[in-house]
Structures are given as C-alpha cells and as structure tokens.
Image (tube, rainbow, N blue to C red; front, side):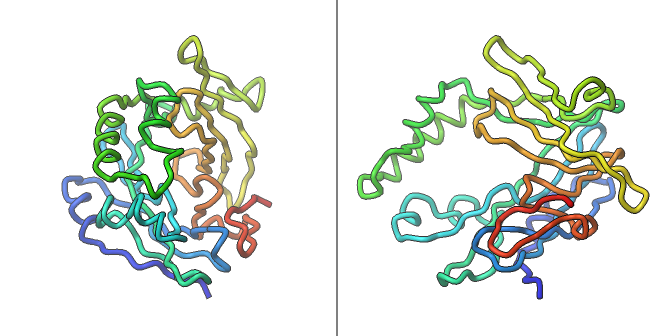
Length: 251
C-alpha cells in the first residue's frame, strides 16, 4: 500500500490565488533509499504567459543525528513549505522541501531557470561551513553567511529542449561563458498510450548545485518525472521501481 504524505494546503491556496490560469494537480510517487514503498505527493503546474510553474519537491531531508538538527532544521528554515512524509525504520520522519520551479516556453523551445552565484566554488564551501565540526557550528554566523550567498545569486535561462536540438546527436553542448557549458542529453524517446515522451538529462558547469538533473515530458511540455526520484502515477507503469532504491529506471 502506497503511503501518503501529509501536507498543509493553505500555502498552496495563497500561491495560486493570484493566477487566473488553470492549475493542474498531478500525483507523483516519491522515492527515497530509506523507503520500502514510495510516498505519494501532489505536484501542481500552472502557466502565466510564457512562464510555466511547477510546485514540487526539490529536496529530501532525513534527520539521523542530533548534530544534523543543530545545523539545519527544515521546519524552522522553510516553515509551511516542508511536507512531513512517512516514518522510516529509524523512527524519524522523512521531510520534503517544496518550492516553485520555473520553466519558460518560447515558440517550440523549452527553457529552464537555474541559479548561479558570482562567488567561487571555494568561497561557497567556506560560507556553507561544509567542513565545520557540528560542535563548533554557530547559527548566527551561518545565517550571516547565507545572506552573503543570497546577495550574490543570479538567475538565467538555459535551453532544455527544442525539436532540432538532437538532430545530429543525442548530446548537445551549449557554451555559456568561456569556462561554462550547458550539457543536455536525450536519454530516451518513446511512445506510450499514444503520447510521445522525452527523457533528458541536464548539467550546467555554472550551476551552484553542480548536479545532473533529469526530466521526462511530452511534446506539449507536460512534466511526468523529475531527477529519477519523482514520477507521476500516469507514467509509473513504464518505470522499474525497487524498494529502498531511491530512484527509478524506465523500461
């Protein structure tokens, strides 16, 4: 039996109040390597002019030690934008952070908004106190560092998909700066229930997270999966989902 996460809808209602466009609600399976069976959470999608919004889980957090909670309490940091998920075998509840993610549609091109930073990677590591022993952690200093990081953040659009992007190869590299490339790869294109799906990965040398991201969408840019961890119930029959795996693969 699929477990269901608990969520307060007040934040969602406030977020959607200013939009006259239709809001599409779609149930997603949420995978984590400490879950025997996925949680189920509703993601929301709406469009305003050329901007496509997705209110979805962007991060997962499992408190495992008291020291972890000293460094960062998701509930205190993000308030109502945190969903309390299933109780794990260690007695802790998994926490999901929910945020609005932006995409842009111009003609038949899909763009993704990413966050970069003017600060160097080494500076960010120091400010995030990645190597600081939890015993020496100071909340006031950490909060001050977060403000410095926030002031240096910048956003830009990257090309995520265009029908001709993979005309010659399944991998496309787009130069952004002298030292920066955006790499988009078409992993799979297939048809299911009379719909064509595109399974792609994206990596940016300029992104703060330095992570590879994954998306599945159709030709109308309806999204069905994110980062191999979140897949809609519509497309779940096409996925291989294993207990405690934390990710899925497409058949």
